Image (cartoon, rainbow, N blue to C red; front, top):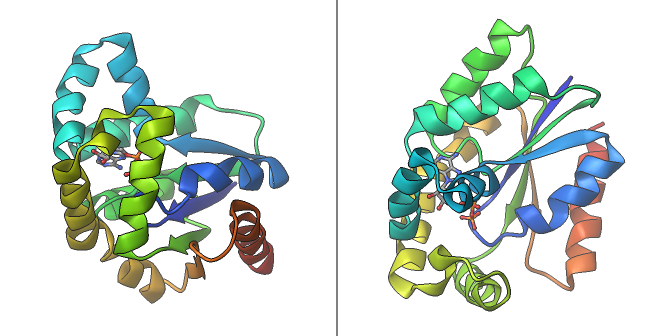
Length: 192
Ligand code: ADP
């Protein structure tokens, strides 16, 4: 099985390009953000607790997202691998993912990173707020905190995966959506 991580700051276009990558390589796309929003929409206790943290621009507890990831690995069959989007998001999650995969005799295949500037993060998220109506996209303070959370907690994963020889990066903010999609697909193809 292949285990790809789609990496990048909020608004980089991970969700926008995940479908094309997943389809081309027969992968199951798993977005922890989408799974959490589904819990919120279903009105579960987990969703209620997650909402407060998401709306503040903070991360939800590691155990919550890791439980979601393990249960996806346990139940999803008939694919050649997984495309993880929004996970791992800090070093503890990355170390735990390594352990989860090791138990299965597996390992992370590669990290596919989409990079954009902080300025682009803001414009993208604000544009998306109008289209998708996500509460965490509409508020300036939340966006600022998500950018801060990304730099403080998520960005160090670059070095973690570079050290493992698994980090591949491309630019996510030049040209049209199609240009960016072509660039990310070419990047994935180059590591096959
Ligand atoms: P974006 O990439 O635009 O930030 P996501 O849909 O990936 O959006 O995530 C939305 C929110 O869900 C995050 O800001 C965070 O609060 C929470 N979240 C998603 N994935 C994780 C994770 N792996 N660990 C902790 N919190 C997460």
